[in-house]
Length: 348
Image (cartoon, rainbow, N blue to C red; front, side, top):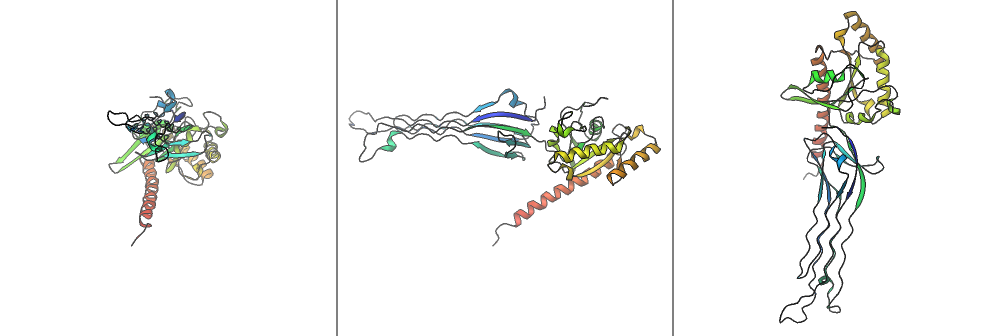
């Protein structure tokens, strides 16, 4: 299935049904009076986040969604039925943005979350509603209320615990395949990864987390170079980042500076996230070269990098354990916030 993380769609709620102008006509009942029913309410537009989806590709082939108009009222005080609603199903982590593509209207960040986007128009009153002592035979009824309409953007930000960052060919996809059951495309040329990949890491039955591998960044990505920073949104929600550095390149310190610069230029708190620094591809380095490259990284980053190899698996378990420790910190903080909310309410 093709990956799509942005889509612009048009939504419209249904118009209300018109009220009816009708008079009761039955044998032996003269002057039966008005009996026109009300129109039904127009359909609403809802959005729901569901498990099992990881792309917005369905909204590439259909961009217009219109709820049904409410049914019109009829004689004998028969009210019209409500128009059929429209339900938009999106992956968990989808944001609903205004037409300006900046204002966040909704954040569908939990499974099963359902929100009302547009409310349908009210149905019009039938002429029975207008009868009275001074107007015993009204010959008019209300039309239905107009529905609402707008253009919105859907933007998917994948829910992942750990995000992988690095230059193209840093070995992120190879590491993901070694750490999880994911099977991303792996090749020896830059920008092999053109769309984010997710992998589930199983350390034990009770220790599981999700890693997101995004396309590589290059210098100037924040200004649109390469694939730009479009896919960095998929690691905004992550607990921490694993920054992979290709140990076989000449200047590992410069590679570190480039990625840190792009993270800071992107903003959204990515540069402030906990970062696990790792020197990758150590299977291709001699012990002396490993120590030299690690010392260079330590000098620029201020901390000792972990040594890993996605090909041989060396150092991968230790790196995953470090990542799991960061995930537990975040989940523990979220659980603490939830407990605080529950205990801060009204008490007798």
